Amino acid sequence: MSRRTIAGGLAIAAALTLTTLPATAEQQAVRFPTAKFPLGTRAAPAKTLTAVTQGIDLYDVKAGTSTDGYTVTVLLPNGKDAGSLTAAETAAAAVEAAGEAASVQEVVRPGVADAPSQTMYMVRVGLWSLKDKKKAEEKAKELKDADLKVKVDYLGDDGLDTTGPWNAKVVMIDAKTFRGSYAASVGASVAKRETVSSMAKARKAVVGLNGGFFNIHTAVELRGEPVGASVVGGKLLSEAVPGRSAVVLKGRSARITEIETIVVVTSQDGQQIAANGVNRAAATDELVLYTEEYGAKTPTGGTDAVLDANGKVVDLRASGATVPAGARVLHGNGLAADWINQHAWENWTVKVDTKVIDLRAKQPIALTPDVNVIAGSVGLVRNGKVKITAKRDGHDSMNMILRRHPRTLLGTTKNGSLILATIDGRKPGQTIGANFVEAAQFMRWLGAVNAINLDGGGSTAMVVSGKVVNKPSDGRERAIGDALLVLPQ
Image (cartoon, rainbow, N blue to C red; front, side, top):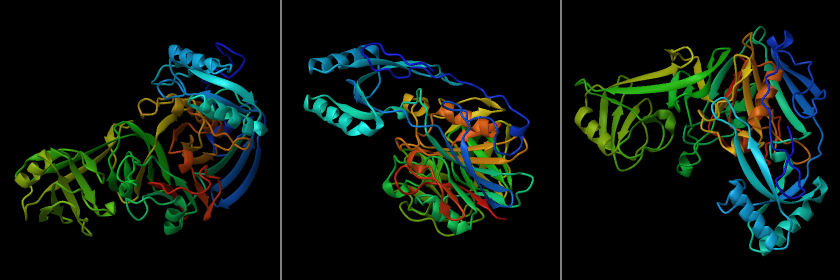
């Protein structure tokens, strides 16, 4: 990694190199690595081991030291902190017109498996130590008074050269000695958000970890809905984002793959239609399947066909009501409502065929009661090599790939053991989090041959024996959409 500026005296890192760490015999089993920490100066980390229960160990891992400080970032004409060279030079000229010196900084977002590298430019003013944040804030105020849009930036968040520090929690679950099982939970309902602690307590879980992303762009009362595949106890509760990474849990086994879901509805008269979604708000002309786990009313302005356990249409109603216990509801509006009114008459039988496809194995997953699926956000490691699939998984921005955030990570080892990890961040001087490249390197270092990134940021939370063991960046545990649970049996 190097540091380079185009103009001015501020030196910031401008490139990041992808590396693949070699596997060792020790990394092929579930044991804490003896190799030096893979990030920063690569010194030996400090670690504390807590034996949780048979086959489960918790490690508190600390590495690196704080040397980063603060700068003031000038927002470009597009309102973002990075853009084209022309936009950066325009913003720098505005700073200089206000009587301040500005540096134009080239920043290279590294290429990943499915997206090439990207060069962008930022404008920075000044450089202050960690203890002098107040001075950076004072400079930012002066620039704002000159009608410039700016923000105070901690350089450790940039995702470029750093010495840390990092504070991580790692749970290693040994496939040979663990006698419990894995499960997923959406809490009391799909629609409602809950904390990991709440979901873990309800199932008496030994370990709980926040799961995938949830939909923050829908109505407030529906924001617990997972973005991506969710299977709980063999029941599909949320459709997949096609091809997105996920972890499939069955009993005490876990495997990482990519998932596709297909829901086909067949009327008694032989007519078929594909359902567009499961347990989420419906768009125009969409057919959405709702299960009793949804925990909210179906959308208004359409038609509902209420199905009993055998697929019999027991009620054809105006939409906007709850899902009866033991039933499912097919909701449609527009063209989908027309299909229901034509092919889902009361007392007719309507078959709902649900398939969850493992795209690596190229075959359906049998949805038995011991099967659970949690969607990841980005693939990090595949078959022992760093392979970051940010674009395929919808996260190929500068902010997501390069900048550091708190991370929740999941990996599997060669012998089938499970590694769960959190890296806290957004705490200058204490812990800086990780970008995707660093997260992948960290999981390889721990011994994962396959690994994915789950939801992170303020959602990152690990619960062990009823206690939140990491330090969520919001200052408290956030309510989320779903969680992975490690059960004692």
